[in-house]
Length: 256
Ligand SMILES: Nc1ncnc2c1ncn2[C@@H]1O[C@H](COP(=O)(O)OP(=O)(O)OP(=O)(O)O)[C@@H](O)[C@H]1O
Image (cartoon, rainbow, N blue to C red):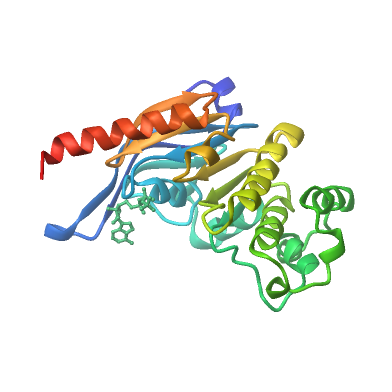
């Protein structure tokens, strides 16, 4: 890989293999995946249930370790880091958005948003935070607790928190999975807006072709392998590609 390519790659895995368990019950969740997530892009990871999407995201984000192969954030190889350094790297260079929001219930909206910068002991960039709070539309909710917010509002807090310390990459795992379609669209608009307006990098796992259509590119997994990539996705094109997986699976399984 050339220096120029590395500079444009926010995160990547090379020949990634992940095996859960051992012996007869071993599951090969990733079976030799190489993929790069480009800086300043919104990439969606799609594929049938059990194809390895969450495993890929967790290993690329340093939440889990690969059995074989390498995962890099920029040019930092994650397996070269001890637990402490990996924790610091996740805290300082990665943002996360999860399906279940994962806000701290005892903290206010404002405190949840500044949690990453507070934990890092750095003074938050006031202008950036102000712009984030306006972007997610929560200025009048800053003193509320998560339980006082709708699901969509809670996820917008989680999005602001994920971007608060300007991470190299925000990883989102089914960020719209618990939301109605209008709230989901708002959250996807925020993720896309952060990429296009502020040159951030987002990698999102989703089941939903409409959600994937917000991305610049979709990478498709099947049986733990990277099987396709699609630039400029539309919901229709993604749905058609997913239907092709269903057809392959039914052919392999044969008539019932
Ligand atoms: N902790 C684990 N222990 C054992 N097997 C696991 C574990 N986590 C995932 N798997 C298995 O690894 C494979 C890939 O799982 P993964 O969750 O990455 O798929 P996915 O594409 O995200 O699925 P879904 O769309 O259903 O969320 C599946 O067969 C799953 O059962």
